[in-house]
Image (cartoon, rainbow, N blue to C red):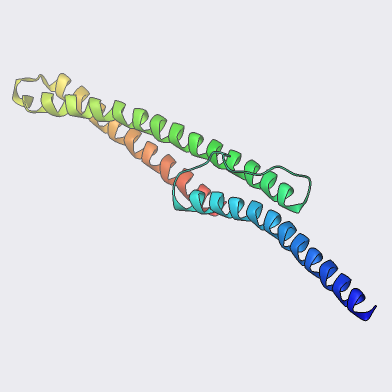
Length: 147
């Protein structure tokens, strides 16, 4: 009888160990997938939600939270790209005008005093506008650094 109890105990213990290993493996596999997604995000510019896991447990909640964070990161990246494109467009306008004025200034001796004054006023205005744009960009960058 002692051998039967020992054999049954050993069988139950091995079954419990096997079930525990399978359960732990199932949980850690999902955590490994999440860790892989986090590593890919930290290594590059990946902001999609591919590789996230489902579930109602802590791992599922962590995955959902990571998905929301990735969505916000993607939106922030798009806003940053739009800002850079808008800033580039805004900076090109006064630069183009300054280039044109520089070309005209090469023929300054051919200009009337009135035309020269207007040209210099235009150069000063475009320079001021360019300075204001740079100040605004620096202000935006400083505000983002504080957040």
